[in-house]
Length: 196
Image (cartoon, rainbow, N blue to C red; front, side, top):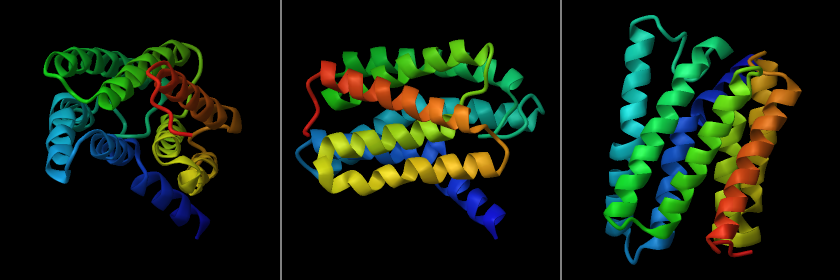
């Protein structure tokens, strides 16, 4: 039962799902209507997330990666390099086409996080799942204030799931959450986009 629950938490709130959710929240908060939010979310997903996801799927199919979201540390080097390059390129394009500032800030935070995680990965396997849970919760809190405090429960839930499944240690899930949360909050403070 616990194993099923841990797998459900990991699979439902995976990094891709949380990325799409927080991109939409940011787009909705930055635009005048729902269709504009959907348009910018679509552009963001096509430029940044979709290419990375398709490359990862191809690598899994060819046996170069163990799975889409859970891989040994040694297989993660290429993912962090790919992520950093794709996010950096998408950031330049989104700035050029005039994307909303909050999406730019989120992508910049994603680029910084990707580079930091890549450096850490040379000697330690840090949790990307808790990193995304922390980033999503932090963004919700900064956008909607203390009314979104409940989203913070996602972080310990994800941490428990990853440790229970023996994908990470307590230190690795804690480091992932703290590093991503710190980066996103710092960047949004620099951009003066915190509502609390």
